[in-house]
Image 1 (cartoon, rainbow, N blue to C red):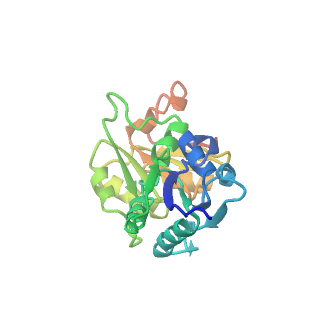
Image 2: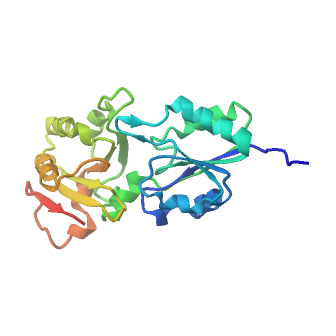
Length: 260
């Protein structure tokens, strides 16, 4: 007699890119998967933790190229769980940080399928840390904002204008296409000399880094050919970057560019 299929869905955060930053719990979940539905991961070596027999379904999204709509992904998760049992939905970073993970969980649970979540290391925190940028520091920054640069309507998030008024460190994901608008918002708040860093392909061997001020960063981007996928970090915490200490006494309006 065949064993009855016991559907189960585990949402796993793959981390910021470096495969070594996948959590142990994520590794264990992948090792038990019958089906893996995975995003456009920064490093597909993470998929090696799944059994060779596991069905692999790419459902990733890149700018201007979506293999599946979100509704189709939701249905694929459910269909595969009911057919094969143990499904892992693998998402970059942390699935609940601009990853639509909560939408997927809600849809799956509406079918009575048990769900589990394995948090991932968010690129919003790990990528700056990898470059020696601490988002909070006593006496420098008491808080930080993590904001999507581009909303679902393809507009600049209104929260960035609010963040520009604060003294907090501001981390912007998916914001490179809106960089000129972001710069303008901070300049309107008289923050042209505020330090800003842009980190492309964070935690990967192909990582590129540019640092400057609000006034100079667009030139830095052009000189270093920085583009998506990249994270933007704005605030005095950038000036305190460990790798700059003892090397630059004056930040002022001078720009610093590096490829590291």
